[in-house]
Length: 319
Image (cartoon, rainbow, N blue to C red; front, top):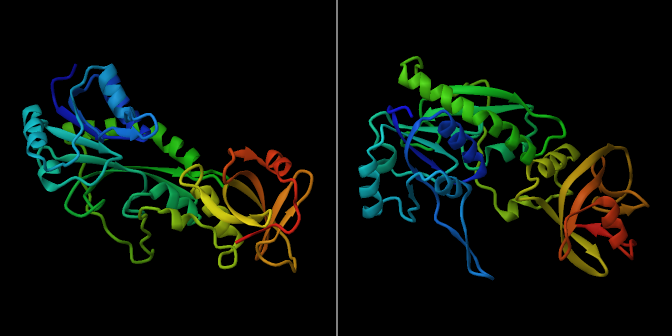
């Protein structure tokens, strides 16, 4: 194991796990891990560990799960670890007492090409906004969120049919290697941190946290391209949804994937047309053909099974 630098890894998600695995496999000196507190599954009152905690336990790496990042016990334990550098991937906002503690600073990986798409949901918003390119960025954490000096970036294309889940998996594959490359560049003094600059020729796009109300499809307001991208950008989670009127009642209808059909028509926006194999929803410039969806109270299923479950397929619309 490499004695220098002493690393504290901070993360909670499966996206974080790729970087942690890479550091461990390459035998870097991980002196401790910080992850979120356990979630409690209410029905059985079972604790659900983060993927990071599971990995820490399996590999016997010291672990902390602070509820409060300014808690005196937590800060005391962090001081005992005495890290040279902290590596942060997919975690909540750190207070200055934490990110400013290591002498080499705290390194963060963000799933966008900063300064574009600062915020909690960069992958989702890049697809929703119809971007064709994104990437990952490593930078030093400073006071303002996602605004520290950039270290390295890796660009990647976004496929025309790619969903947020698929793009996350693609970015995740490269996250560990970029962390290693960045860490080695810092250790060997081969990286010059660059101050983030806003290009006045391009508008700055942000990536705020997405709430349930933001996921509702506005059929009458938005274009076919925007709705299509929104469905991709929210799939599989938190998922685009609408209200589906069937059996004289409205049900929440989640749409995981759809295809665009550009076609002129005179139908009311939001009308639903069902044939033997297709479920089409009328929009401004044509139709969206549902490929996968989930009606409230049922499982996620492909369009054929959705149609089979609709005994009465007349007078159906979305709102």
